Length: 459
Image (tube, rainbow, N blue to C red):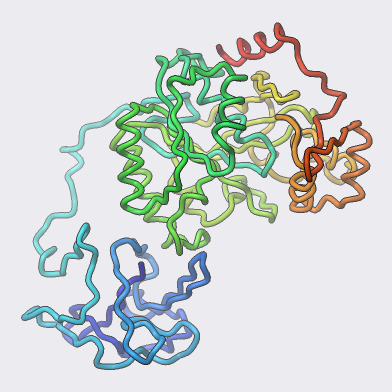
């Protein structure tokens, strides 16, 4: 779906025009009267379009339908050619500025959400008197980290243990266990999972069993789903159907609609607005997982991959990172909180595929997700060792997968091999591929220890 192009008529009204008068060159983004200018948007599939509008206003791409192409041409009617300065063919769309008739060639809004004209909106009140607004108390799934009816983001590097954290939350909510620092536990409740990276049979169910989840209350959407208008409606319907109090989306970028530029605020804002409406209308706590960008930034809330609007849409943002002083320990720290004071950082351990809460941590969000404070003193081999422990924490992994993730973190093959040798990681051949097993230096807990881990996590 692509946006319509609007041009300013001489009488101040808006009108449709295939070749609007250009106050500035279409290759520039210099603002003119009323802040309107030429805006270029690039989608994930490489499509680039340029249109005329207000840069402060986001575009809901689902509101618009792509106009038909003219015979013998490859440019889109009503849109500027993204690769040149040519305007679309004139005469394709006749302006209808006086409101006396409807232009048959005008690009139409979708039937589900018809666009309203200026005349139709005239006289409709937009403001609400605050005296008529009833104050509401914020309710929490996990105070002060995860509110009901709002969006929460869990952010961290790949392989750091974000999925283990979200599965631990799902397990404890499903059986009504008290979360760390909480004054009381929620009632045993349903959980809805949307995960694009972990298989329900080979990863999700084993982890949930290990964490002591009541799997009769945990539901998973396994089919592809994009958060366009139809997808958001499906999600809302499923939340209501299963009665979910917690919804986990891992990762959020896998559920963006096609042609969504994740780095563009105007592109991701309508998607997150839909998701926020679903949370508000159902009362469910929606938690989505987001990876960090490659560049290191001082402020934790700016480290997430993609547009800052992912952070802006959330009422709470949690940063997950490794404890630089303990390779087996992870820390979840508050990076943003709009509805309460930020809570203390909480630690958890991952040992041989076992999760356990480990009390409070003094580390802040700014100290996680980037180079540890003593990064200059740590060798490349130590960094590779920490990576390998975390990567194999939940069981054997294909060697090619481990090497690929290490390469993303700029860990060389030689350094990875040394770390593998230091940890005494053994390789086994399974069919046509090699797998790496967890380090033998971290023994698997006994059944009694496993029960204690689950109890320590609030069970």
